[in-house]
Amino acid sequence: MRKIILLVFVLALSLSSCEKDDICDANTPTTPRLIIGFYDFLNPSVLKNVTNLKVVSPGMTDGIIFNASATDDFKYLTNGSTISIPLKTTDDTTSYSFILNSGNTNPALVNADNIRFDYTRADFFVSRACGFKTLFTLNTSNPYTHTDAAVPDTKWIKYISVEKSNIDNENDTHIKIFF
Image (tube, rainbow, N blue to C red; front, side, top):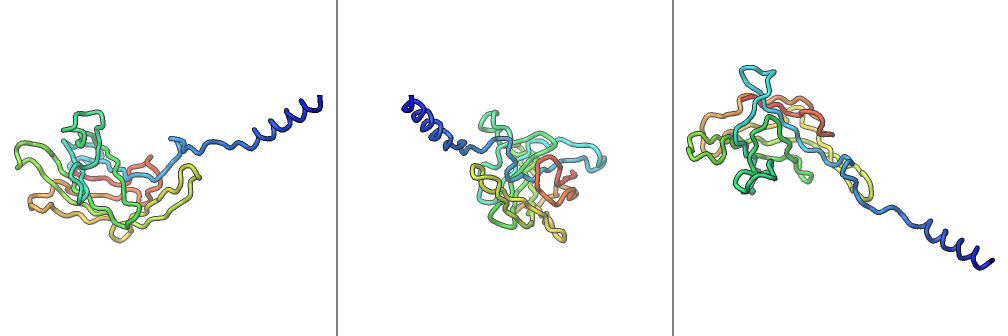
């Protein structure tokens, strides 16, 4: 009888030392992306869909994937009124080229504007499984620089408004672009 009790005790003791698997739960908030909403320049309270928008960072050829389930030719395009794009966690600036009507066979209809976002970063420990997340704060004096593309034409982005300079979640629109 003593051997059985001792065996049960040793088994219970060995099982109590097990720890939870280190798997980061998909619902755990991690580094947030920059949320950009597109609005009608003539009617600023109305969201406006962009047409075949492609967002590309310097050095990239494919751009950010918006429509992952679409065919390869169009998975980098969005036709919505809101996008989420990542900021660099290792640098205090991130640049993107916003190409309207990307892929159009008429080059006169394709228009690219460049935006560089300037910010500060702060890293926070989430958990052993998830690691660190980076939160961003857009610079108050100069949060962005908006320029025309390498081939000058009329800028399609008419106005940019910073709605929330602290980028700590993906629930709010951080930037509004009017066109």
